[in-house]
Amino acid sequence: MAELTVPHSDYFEGVLQLRGGTDEIRTWIVKRVKKDGKALITKIKKVRNGHDFYFSDQHYLQSFGKKLKQTFPGVLKASRKLHTQHRVTSKILYRVNVLFKPIPFRKEQIITLRGDKVKLLAFGQTAQIQYEKSGKKKNISLEQLMTARS
Image 1: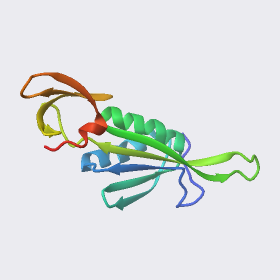
Image 2: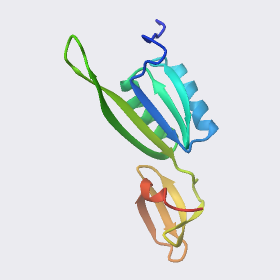
Image 3: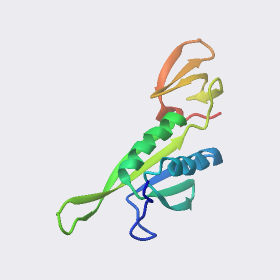
Image 4: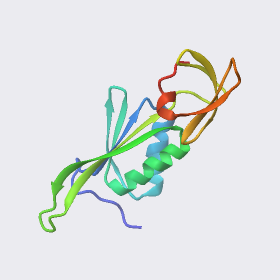
């Protein structure tokens, strides 16, 4: 297998923005990228609420974000920004940002959501909760779950 190279040390095609992540998630990201060998992390930058990982391949970054969400429950958002236009082909080139916010709660934990005590039953595309008073079960979006307090 050929060794991956980048044109210069500051080169990147996309950024994985990890917000509120643990050491476990950060080490998993670095180990998984090295294991896959399809892209390089050219820079890791500590920011106010987390870390930014600069990737050398935007297509790998997008698929890596999906793997990250499957491994750790959380909110994943991807966006792109016009970067430049290729000099020879005139093709428009974008830089990709993938934002990942892991859920700060775990299964079976009791939290307060909009003034009600609820128990977290499961995570997936949505979170399944059960109200403590009524016992009623409901599915809510992960974004709504992020507003809850433990």
